[in-house]
Length: 382
Ligand code: FES
Ligand SMILES: [Fe+2]
Image (cartoon, rainbow, N blue to C red):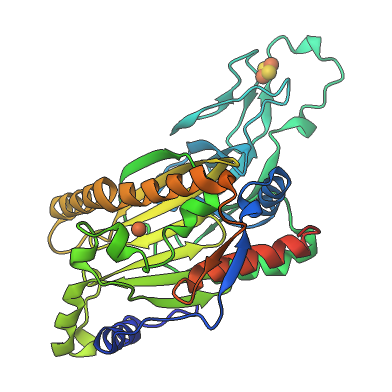
């Protein structure tokens, strides 16, 4: 179970920080070599590590019916994730067993996957069903040549994929899954999906979500008027983290009994699901963003935007509020963050910095780098 505080405790802690002009701090600072954002070997090792971890691929709500599938790369492996006729979700490498052709692209609903090259067909369970002119393959073992399957686990409203069985450390991988917060629910509607190519290393983009030290200078006229300068509550759950960004209207809760708190429009929770996923709980919607490394200096972010559970205001009103929320975040703060991040990417090669120093106000980033460093070392690299 995740070890995050109750809403009441988070609010109490945020109000105390606001009153005392304090914030959650790290006891230590962290010096991350700039080389770690630029080195091709390091990048390959990070991808290899990602393939051994349970990583959210999509919300359960994006695959509601049998045959619903999403094809996308994860840690540079092309995958198909599909809900089968038995209701279970499975993940396969998106490669035909004849000569490796990609079977499907994007998302859809299918009864079977038919290879566009020579027409070999596969069931939703990956079984090789048919080979046109089969007599051309006299000794071919159809049973042994279903699609190459990888582990898919449905948990807390998300589908996680583990590409390579972490045989040596299966318990740690499953502990990591247990530590994920239970935020997504089946009745939430995916009302938008966005895909953004960011011209920067994936870790630079991730870091932009994990601290509130930049809210005033970088979001001066967008987020800052609604929030605070450098006020966060920061918690950890295994390798994951939750960074709480209070809004100014949280101060209204000083006059409300804790058991009456409704916090969704009083703060944003940014859950960092280690290592490359951000699950944000915003005023009127939730977003699950998968930060996919494309190359050492390019990142594709696929984000699923979900309504919060529909409430008494009715479905349409909830959807409208969610869309307004999304437009505000994407058109303002998100663009400002991407401008910062791509600016950092441009300077990496300049030699201006041999290390980046993460200070006391950036504990969730320090936690991330510590876990990356430790896991890469355990993985046989450094
Ligand atoms: S590559 Fe798929 S049928 Fe030939
Ligand atoms: Fe930001």
